[in-house]
Length: 202
Image (cartoon, rainbow, N blue to C red; front, side, top):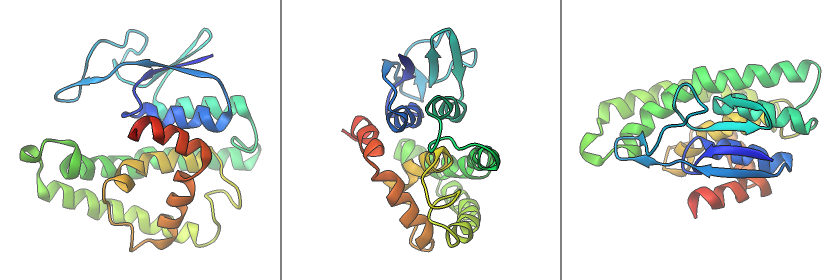
């Protein structure tokens, strides 16, 4: 059984969603936060002392998107395709981490995550401006096909959608990007996503 260390209201949500999509049994080992985004206790198996971390038998992994690639690999196709599409999965996963997430988080911290008194409007605006440039790229890609790799959902979609999830849930304006908005809604209303979201939002 997979052991996911974290709580659903963290990046562990991504891994819970992946396990649901893969149809693999898993257990969430709860580790939450104190004020200031500090963990309530140390994560001994993660040298970075962050969540999530994964135990799969003797294998220990950290980094949520890498964990998801591992989970998808265990499930195989269609969640984790083969051949050139496997390389495209890696491309979009790294794009999610390097191009999208820094700007998502810059906006998120200053739009809803931090206490209102600590938010900086100019930082939220800068995050949105940078993210919108990336969403314009994504809009062009999704104008060509319904999902990142083609006609079917894969872990590439899961990884990028899960990075955008918090902004989507908390009022980010996706209206200028209708293809992105429709794709996000399709991803987030999948049965496995709804099961994971129930844990996070419930």
